[in-house]
Amino acid sequence: MINFLALLGWNDGTDREIYNVAELTECFSLERISKSPGVFDHNKLIWMNGQHLRALTVDQLLPLVAPVLKKAMPEDARLDNPEVLRKLVELIQIKMNTLLDAVPVAESILQARPPEDEESIALVGTEKSKVLFAALAKEFAACEWVKDGYNAAIKAAGKTAEAKGKDLFMAIRAKITGSCHGPELVGILDVLGRDEVIKRLNS
Image 1 (tube, one colour):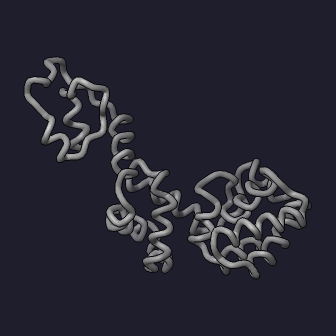
Image 2: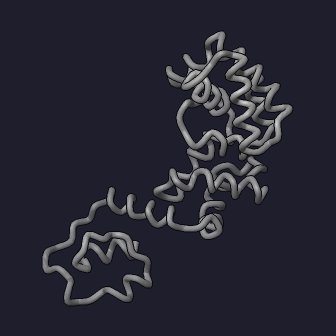
Image 3: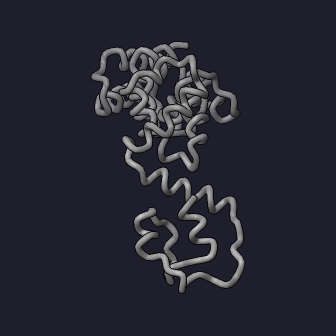
């Protein structure tokens, strides 16, 4: 907000728009204040807020976003797990322009839901996808639960089902989250954990 208000009637003579408080304190001068009235741009304020949120470290962002998530999903005990919460915030930070933006993204990951949009429904409804999900559940049950393990399991299941491209990766995402679009798939697997992922694949 300080950054935004400062730029309503002042600039440093460049096109720069993002400053922290220390930088503004150092370079702000009354001589560069414009005589023209400032114009409030809500979209720019939201964009600027997002730039500052994404510039934070996860350690800085966690205490800001954790209360928002816990208030929105008070029954979800996974949010009380520091490791899960940290992985979740790392995953959704790039999607945030405000702290409230974290809620729908987190819900889309943590809350199991069936596909609702036409593209996702089509991807999970084929015979090939059914073979894929069954094969992937078996591969995930046996693999090491790390990024290389996920990727090897997905590759093996894709080979079994003769699926690749969107019929592989987007179908898996749609089955697990209800949407073929969203945060990085590997990050979603990491947050949900083996048991929950296999449960969703078998549902």
